[in-house]
Image 1: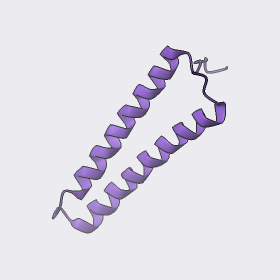
Image 2: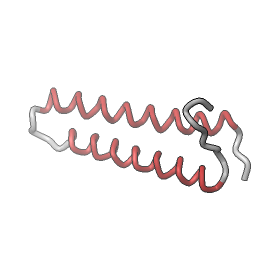
Image 3: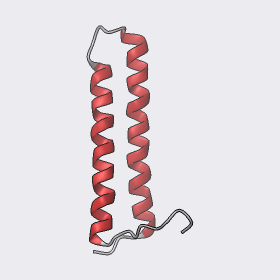
Image 4: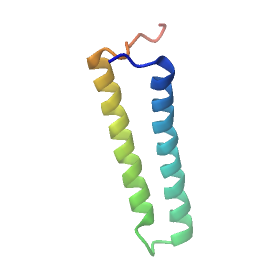
Length: 74
């Protein structure tokens, strides 16, 4: 399966935006709920799950040959 370059980039950017959204939601809930609900924990748990999924997706893409890793200087 050959993936389009823009689709790969869009998928990674989408994951990063979801991770940042959940990080911001966790901060918002932490400041507003003052420990009265589990919304902070749930938002940060989703963030960790998305981060692990993104890392796994990148490792899978490297293993399948969809993306090619390069050094710092390309």
